[in-house]
Length: 522
Ligand code: FAD
Ligand code: AMP
Image 1 (cartoon, protein in one colour):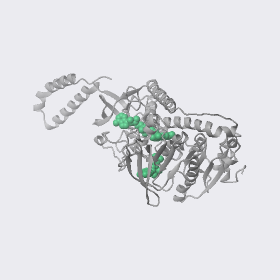
Image 2 (cartoon, helix red, strand yellow; image 1 turned 120 degrees about the vertical axis):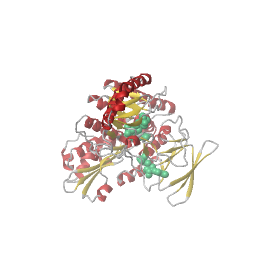
Image 3 (cartoon, protein in one colour; image 1 turned 180 degrees about the vertical axis):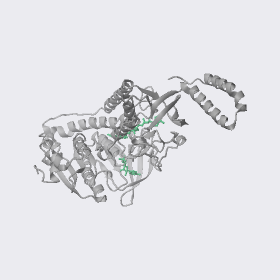
Image 4 (cartoon, helix red, strand yellow; image 1 turned 45 degrees about the horizontal axis):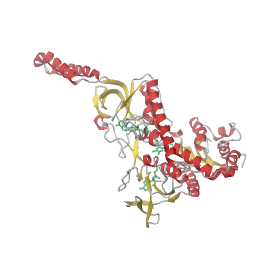
């Protein structure tokens, strides 16, 4: 990047001032204004060495890096800036954000390794396979996960080069508006006509519980244990709490999850959450629901004593070797300098945006975890694509009703559209059709018949309003349901589409049929 040479700039400023000093003392007030315009123009041209972009994307996470690639594809001159090194060996800012470095990808790698381990130990016998002396090499499992993350981070840098995205390393702070552009301080200042805020989120912290990411961890620490903790306590029975709890339980930890609400997975359809409570408890996860954590003591022997009041209000304590705090995430807007250009921030710290991710300031957009909506990587990506297409004059759009959500436990949970409780609250008349995997031939063959598919359809129009799946491959099956909702399909449409046999996704068809004429295999 061309540096702005202050020595040269000063010389040019003195030159400009000398050349206009004499006329300036003679001009009228009006000409003074005109003169100031000339001076401003001169000063602007003076700073032309400053790197200029059509768009600057702040944050190279799921939203920011995909937005940048799309911008490159659309022919925009784009830069993407990232501050966090995560586990980069040289300590340099690394692209990929939470999802790649300490979220989706590493957690799925560990879920996969631990599931392999559990399948060999506990489920292979049912297939007639006898394996003795199975052990888990935790450092090798963590190294595998780290190698996947490194490879994908390199992949993003390759994609940046391929799509002519200027990757800038450093912490971005918005300095202010200059004419119709914005100046942003990174290592050197840059100027851009549009800004896309994609700064993501950070783990929410609880008062009195300091994270050290060794014994008291957030997601980053919990994805890097070098040995299996004997007793693991997790605060928060949301998606992250259940996924991390599953990993370490499968490897041998005694896991207790403390949740403030009376049910786990509060964002799920209630019937799904109840089913998951049953299935997760049967696997050995212990839940304390309706419980409030009141304090943490660090014992000299390295263990932690957690104090909480249980659902009946009785004070309880729990000693654990490691504690994971997974009580949600907060948007990253502090110290970004957004106040300098007047971008509105909500009481909860989210950047305020409309349905097209436009902020309160023209030409400034915000996407992903830093704005309203589900904190999901693909939602951030979809918003990134939409925003760049709109900047390029196209009609980018996100259908927020058709964004799937997934929990990668075993069985998995996946859903898209509305829950039964949302439909009831909205007063929408609907029909529910349900089909259990115990009646699905492929599930029997696979050796896991847990879970069901539930399809919710509008009682009058038959339009599919929501699909909820609990099953081993729910994450792959939910695509059909998202497509159905996107194309405003009727439940009857799903029922009439040929579904290959034997497959798990036949259960979606059966559940769709169950909303109307009835399932065939039940
Ligand atoms: P982020 O990925 O958080 O990226 C924002 C980036 O901006 C960060 O790298 C940050 O360092 C950078 N930044 C912030 N401020 C500045 C600044 N001033 N200058 C420069 N850079 C800055 N979602 C799913 O869809 N599927 C999953 O399976 C899934 N699993 C998850 C598992 C875990 C354990 C966690 C924690 C999250 C998971 N998520 C999952 C959520 C997903 O990670 C986020 O929704 C996604 O990362 C949001 O993308 P983003 O681009 O908005 O923000
Ligand atoms: P998620 O938003 O999916 O990461 O889930 C976070 C979970 O943590 C939710 O189920 C919250 O109800 C739960 N939670 C939030 N604060 C607390 C707290 N102080 N104690 C226990 N659970 C909490």
